[in-house]
Image (cartoon, rainbow, N blue to C red; front, side, top):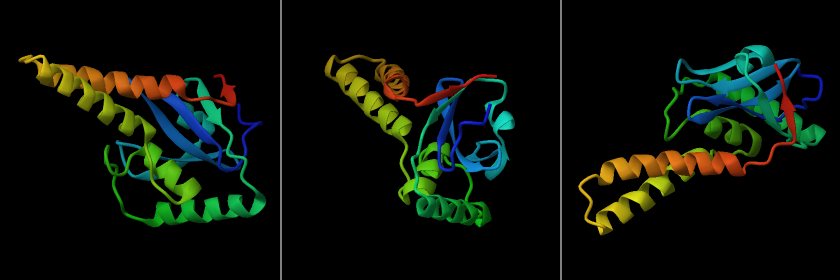
Length: 155
């Protein structure tokens, strides 16, 4: 399952309505942030939870891979807890890879939610909150459907 992975590759697997993100550290190790706990390291198989894992190749140079591993070690030593909006799995991965926390899934959910809420308010709907929720789900799903993967690891 892991033979084609390189240090810094971004791993995604389905988790209900979203994609759970992790990053490959090398030596069969994945770093990820889970609502069940803090930042943790596990095997690729454990990360997969029996599901298909989609991979975006990082293409890091040797120097960048070392910097990536150093940032990952620092994140493991911090006592920051999971937060859907400010410290989720995707934000952890992007911060370790690039130094900047980012979550395309959260951005898509926020934009979709706002757009649908505004449309519902404009239409004078009494169910704007439900339209907003549906828009958030659709926004996140759209972001995930547009992501390009370089590799798919099967169970």
